[in-house]
Amino acid sequence: MINLGVLCSGRGTDLQSIIDAIKNKQLKANISVVLTDKPDVMALKRAEKAGIKNVCVNRKNFTNQADFEAALLKELKAAEVDLVILAGFMRILSPNFVHEYKNRIMNIHPSLLPSFPGAHAHRDVLNYGVKISGCTVHFVDEGTDSGPIILQACVEVKDDDTEDTLAERVLEQEHFIYPRAIQLYIEGRLKIVGRKVFIN
Ligand code: GAR
Image (tube, rainbow, N blue to C red; front, top):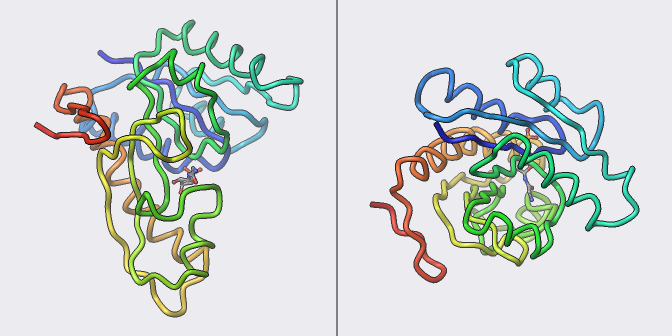
């Protein structure tokens, strides 16, 4: 069984969708550790409730990014993680970290990449005035939200949407596609060729 290490920064609803998919046997994986960069976040409580090892690697306790990432890597190795899952993890990982798990880090982003990368996707979507948004699961490369795309789902943007109402509808789709993308990986059905991912 493949071991997942899930990294979160906050509420952890994406984490919850993975926990639920494992419980429902839609996802044949084991979460061996949940890591957060902040203390007292809901994601830790969700992991605790599900009986999953959870550790806060508090970014504030580190003076530099390299030491912080070394601490994350130590936890991931200790938990024998095969695939790293970024689930609302609001930090950019250095190329060093990415190389440690080359093609074995997935992220979910709340827009149709390559449009609206970065930390404020919903705000940027609403300001720009696009009619369709959505979410993207992709492999993580050295850039920001730039790696090969695995799955995407669309959501209509409504005239009266706020960041919160849009986020809520996009999250529904996130919770649908993220466990599926992970299961495709587990089944060995994802082939990365250049910046494309082919699904067999
Ligand atoms: C999700 O919408 C996820 O796509 C986004 O943070 C939210 C986490 O929600 N991630 C990013 O913006 C990464 N750049 P959650 O804490 O409820 O899972």
